[in-house]
Image (tube, rainbow, N blue to C red; front, side, top):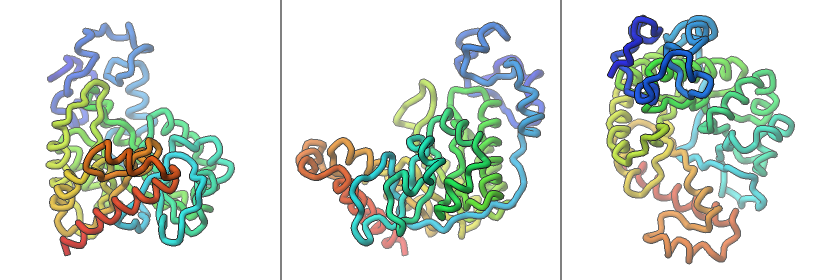
Length: 336
């Protein structure tokens, strides 16, 4: 589907667009410049688009540079709020800290102390957060070292949203923004996981080329459904096919961090699609479920509530971590 403004669109003129996916701009039959201040879409008619594409971002081609990557474990639980109970020995050797929750305090104390994590826990900053939180993070580049490097922390590159129902130009600017941030984090001495946001097959080709040229040792691939209106469950099959294709493009040694797939039904398919490739499972479900009083991987929600109702929330989180880690590592062992 074309919006009819191809002649004035950087994405089309630079050869990156085979047609927009169809967005709210088309449905609204927008008159250029009429509602741009109230519109969330970035289209060719939006004021400042050309300056952003060729000024701030220096074109839509993904940048070239060296990426220093962390060495991640097979399983990485995400902490989205401060812990109050100290984990026991070996209970939480690694944790990702959700970057949308600790913005103000983390700049002063670092993400480890802010999340209540002990010194022996290795930490990674999770930037699968709302776009506004990402904008705030990117404005504080001068403080990255204090919040991350001194905490021995690695980081995921920002997951700038690539909405299915947005103009193609918006997709390309989002991907360029994330790639630039990955290079800047690495330059600042923070090991970084490249974020592979995508809409179509050509995007996966571009990210694979970026990973090869940059020497990145790991990349994150998300199965989370995104879109301002599109929330269909059928997207899972498309993401799995994209994941399998992406894994076929990159060197066998590159680790892929899997985001948004924590389910006893889906994880076997993910592990099988990756073949012998090293994987890391990024798990937000364990923490969120614990805060709701649920034990994960129970046969029924009623059982999950019954089993978890008498456990302190942090203790419930540690038990969820044990369950998911055991399930996932069992899958990985079966592939050897």
